[in-house]
Length: 352
Image (cartoon, rainbow, N blue to C red; front, side, top):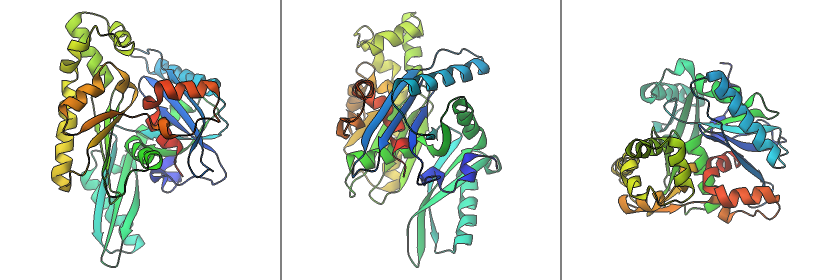
């Protein structure tokens, strides 16, 4: 298969193509591009550069969408002193899957076949048109436990196509939900005896990523995000989506009373996912949902989530615990103002 995932072993779980190459995190979303680079040679990550750029409206034209996305990537790379040649890029949505597995002890050759057979049963797409990767989490003489991740070639190639117009090569591919978990583990130093829950609210998708004390990941992409909230309010008020978006992001109280109804689908999906997880894992050892993503910054959404979920909700800016003293002024302002929107990019940039 002619894909990045197929050509670089263990890319989904973060082994570098070359130990000598510098990588930056490139998060290409539906509404914005986010780029982050760290100096990971230190004991803790140190910010080198960060940027965010909105993608201009592209309507229904695929050609315009590609051009506008490439323009946003170029804008990011020109606004901060990035010095990497390669990027780690993420994919999400129905064309990706993350699942855990547990088998009796198997040889390496037997394990690869068993993982593929298991993936064929649980992946919502044909693996013949995708790429599969896996990571062993723990093993002994009796059993092997791990996690698998898969993505369609179409999803991978789409991200490659967006990035191909820039000077940055896509060196590694990852799953957005796994990048979020990587970010919270590396930056928050989450307790090993607790479960960490992250909710990333994007434009088209909202991603719930959970990792338990045994390091097993759980990822679900909900096909509802900021666009759904804006469209609901626009329909109720008769205003244009652009006017609604502008009001929500400028902390206007104009639509606060409509936000709860507009966000109801998101709240229900998140609540159902958390209850499903607790039922399946028989574990409720978490008390906080770390909320991030570009649309976590609208209105009173995080407060609204906290009032309706089974756990507290906290707006999470991962850069609050990162040394930013060596970054340029533009990058510092970016992470201070838009840090929660950069969580996926930060997790991608932290891949080792």
